[in-house]
Length: 60
Image (tube, rainbow, N blue to C red; front, side, top):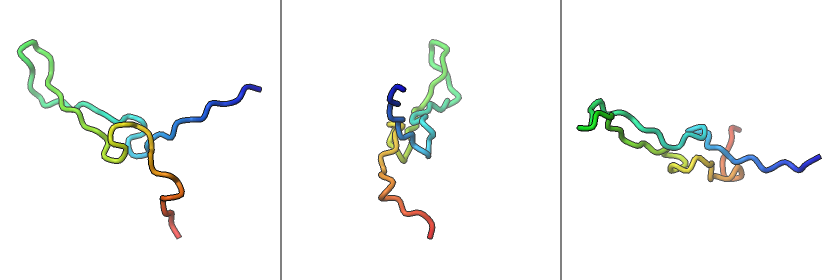
């Protein structure tokens, strides 16, 4: 059996989609839409959870 590669720790806040582009509703002179990038506030746009499970307090 082949060893499994470790799975990356995907950010639970953005679910691995760390940067999205939001349309402003306006268009450029070339006809394409103007967009603004928005980074995930938790992972800072990396898509990987950086907080250790030991540092997160859970429930009771």
